[in-house]
Length: 170
Image (spheres, rainbow, N blue to C red):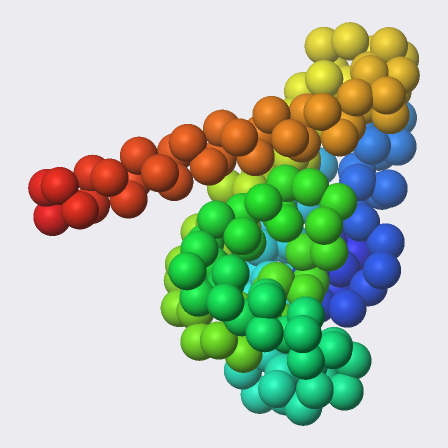
């Protein structure tokens, strides 16, 4: 449930529940990652709905015009990539799910990108805990930013390959 509401408005990331659950029951860590991934992606669809119905008013109230213009420009050019980066990193994912509704991103695209980005993040955490046990906590806390950057680079390369293939062959 936390993974669902975090994607819309809750300030704490699902990792704060996923990681302790995975440590408490490592045999079910992948199941916990799956539940967090699915509910986070469904919450992303909820954030999209909030953005589509009330997002412009929220954006005008809480975001400066300069930041709103910058986010809109970037999102219109690279929306799926921006959403994927937010799904992988500590960047507020909810802001991008709501922005996707404001700017009219297809909810199916949002759901697919959310499943991929959140899945990579949550399954990587669960797998590390299963493989490395207690040593994983030190690695996750000490290297999370670097792992997130590496995942973003990988996601960007995949996205650029997709754009190239789409332009060349489709």
